[in-house]
Image (cartoon, rainbow, N blue to C red; front, side, top):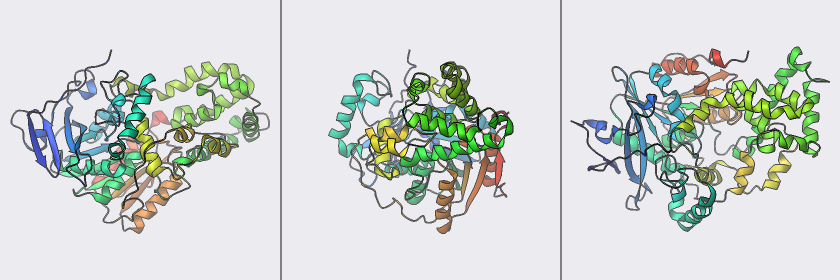
Length: 489
C-alpha cells in the first residue's frame, strides 16, 4: 500500500525575487516560516517527525518569467537548539531525490544542531514537477516508470520538447538561488552537494544572486571539459579503482595465495575468458548476468569491496555458489541505500539523467552500445551506466554561457573526496579543484582514505570534524579515515 501523498494547500501566495510560494499559513508566521507546514508523512517515519514541507512555484524558464511555472518540493528539518544558520543539501544523479539524505538525517542534525537543514527535490525528481505524467506520484507505478508508461512518457517528452529542455542544470541552479532567497532564513548559510549535487552547486556559484558562507562538495564531479573522467568513461574509472583493489590483494600474501599463480594472473585470465565468451555459465550466477558489472557494483561500499576476492575465488572455482554469496553476503552491504526505498516517491528519474547527461555531462553522447562493448574489452570492473546511456535518447538543450565558463568570485569551498571513489575519480576532482584555484577560489581538499562515493555515508566522523573546522575558519586535516564500523577487518 502506498503511503499518503503529501498535500500542501494554497491559501495565499507570496511573491519575492521571481518566486511564488504557496502554502497554508501557520500560526503567527514570520520569515521563512511562512512557506512551511507540518508534512503529512511526518508521522510515518520517526526521522521525519518534526520536518516541515513546502511546495514552491518557480519559473519554468528563469530568464523568461512569463513562460509558466513548475512546482519545487522542499523539506525543512528545523535547527535543534539555538539557531545559527542553515544548510541546503543537494542530492546526486541527476535524477535522485532529496530523500536519499533522510535515512542519515538524524546523525547530520545531531552533528550540526544549530542549523536548519533544507532538502529540496530538484526539478524533475521526487515530488517536484516531473518530465512526464508517468513519473508523477499519482501515476499507476508512482514516480518510477514501469510497463506501459514508457511509451507515453517519451512521447510526451518529445512532443513537449520546449518544456523538456527547461529541466536543465542551469535552471535547477536558478531554482536553488530562488529557494534560498525565498524561504531561507537569517544567519550563516551553506550549500552541501553530493555527486551531481556538487556540479549543481558549482553552477549555482556561477549565477547566484544570494550570498552563502561556503559550499561543501562531497565526491566532486569532474570539470565539464574533462574528457578523461566524464560519464562516458565511467567503466574506465571503475576499472582503475578495481585494479587498485586487486593490487592491494596482490600485496597481501594471504590474499594473493588464494589464487593459483597469484591474483593478478588469475584475475586477468578470468577477464580474458569472459571477453572471449568462454564463461557463459557466469551469466546465470551473478546479478544482471554480467560479472564485470557485479564487480564494479561491489566497489560502491567498503563492505562489499572487501568481498571482491571472495567473489573472484567463487567465479573461478565454484561459480554455482555465487547466487547464494551475492544474496547473503553482498546484498546486505547495500542495506543503507535500500532503506531509502521505504519512503514514497524515491524512484530515480532516468529521463532527467538522460537529458542532462546527453546535453552536458557526457562528452561522447553519440557512442553506441557496440562502441561501449569494444571499449570495455579487457576491463575487469565496469558500470552498466555506460551502456544504458546509449539507449536514452532525449531532446537536448543547448549548452549555455555557464557551460565550461571560468569561475569567478567563488565562496569558500570544502571538497571531501574518497581515494577509492569509483564514480567520480579523485584525479578528476583534483583537476577540477585546480580550475577553482586558478580562478582565485579558496578551496580545501580533505581526502577520505579508502572511502568510495558519497563519503558522508561512510565517514561521518570525518565529515563532522571537517565541517566544524570549515565553518569556524580553522585548519583542516589533509586526510581522514572511514568510520570504524566501515573499515575492512
